[in-house]
Image 1 (tube, rainbow, N blue to C red):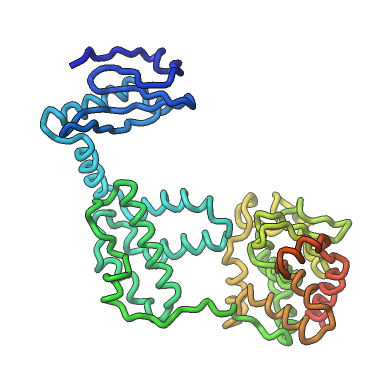
Image 2 (tube, rainbow, N blue to C red):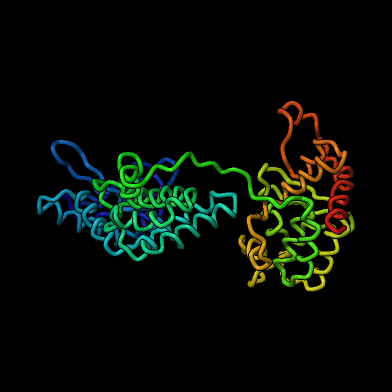
Length: 391
């Protein structure tokens, strides 16, 4: 065996020459042309070179890399492949990592890529609420029966939710397998094809359908009752109805987006479904709401949650509807009520009503030539809607 401990900590922290630098005992520091470096353990098996990564130079010290290499050399002396030994250790660790613990890791990694706040909340809610019985179960011990106990109570009564939940459980378990927490040879107990489809009744083709909406003629009476309700969530819902905004747009509203002089609210691109900023003309009634809230302004958000540095939760406005005992109506459905009112009761052009909803209309060529956002025309429309709601 080659001499051990040939490298020094200073050399390892400063070397930039690309290539492999041997420390002895199968341990090497591999430096890439980009300047990044990582530790590798190399050995021969059946006439072929095998390699195991031991981590980045920036994270794993020389002393730590030597300890890892020593453990792998012990495996070799026992006739055990180091990679197989590592996989066995990961499978053993799976008994200590629960579904709930890995869900937190999974969501923390994936949530940053989900633009829609409601989408993030739905993932978290379903995995925390409906899959609560799985959260304390070690990843490697979750069985088909465990998954069935989660799905069966809601499979027919909440078909769409149950279908999405099954897919999310499957995704979490697949990620856990890739991360080495579940044996590669173990099939996913939440898979559908050829597995759960044999045990659960096949639901009819699910359709998202339309968001349940209140008839526009009932909105004025509802709004009158809403104005009597106290709380920031009630004001957020009232503002959302008057501006025909999406929940995420209004819940995330910040004072920096409100121009009191111009009477506008500019929603930034990161909260817009169409991935472009949207100027909202504020009616007198909508302006009155933010002006009243401005007197109690604390923090950046127009509609702050219990913690001033965070907005209301995405369920806050839905809970207002429940407290007012309004059934079969969603917050998003008020956008439909607005659109129905504009089409049935006014003579505003279709494109103005669609622009008020921040819908993208026309083909790419038409969009390229339509540079303006018809703000003044929309201002007249939104004031008419607010006046109708107040009658």
